[in-house]
Image (spheres, rainbow, N blue to C red):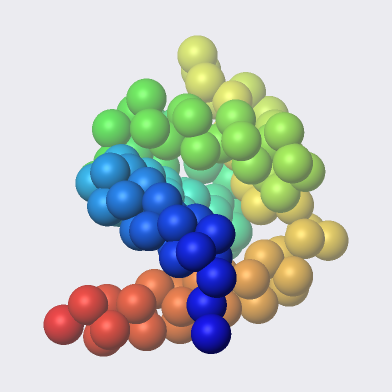
Length: 120
């Protein structure tokens, strides 16, 4: 038998999930979009060093979004700054991280595909 306290706690959790459901859905959606952007940028710079405008043109992303991704990749050691090409630096994927990132990207893509299948 369930105690009254357990029932009250479960009802409170249900209400909280219902109240915050929209916010959680938005956060999950934003995370998917950002993860996809990061994968696209990493894939683009993994073959050769490119400037932010070159990556933006190739991926179709806004230059500001590409700069955000490149900055995050540099911060966590997944990309390195190369030589300067005119007004812009070239960026490329860090060699030692490339194999690990490929595995992580594969898992993320599989998870995203599974979630989309679930949602259908």
